[in-house]
Image (spheres, rainbow, N blue to C red):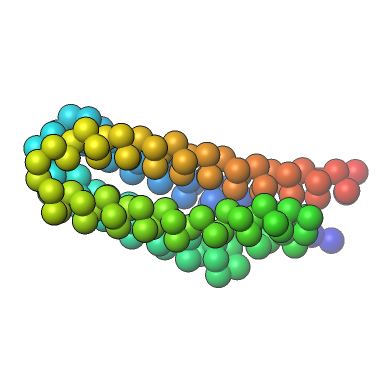
Length: 146
């Protein structure tokens, strides 16, 4: 029999991590929109986001939440692996944005605003799909116990 309390706890941890990441995304977005000449602040916030994402992704890649979901729903493996392969792309994109800010102090705001908006949309879509994989796996497990 599967210990549901552990799985529910893990899902709650993942959702809490996602909420924290969304808070950081909102903070960076606010800074980008409000402080055109605050390149140092924005760069530091993007670096902080990258570090937190590295930790978040490392946990997922080292047998985290998706792996547990796949034990219950192995048919979702291909979708989950596609999501895991996106992790380095997100980190690279943040690294490039941070370097770009540090290197170009002129006319950076419009480009950064656009790039960060696209990044946020892609990342939120990614997290939505991760949540969907977990939900599908969790729902299927619940259904099999009825």
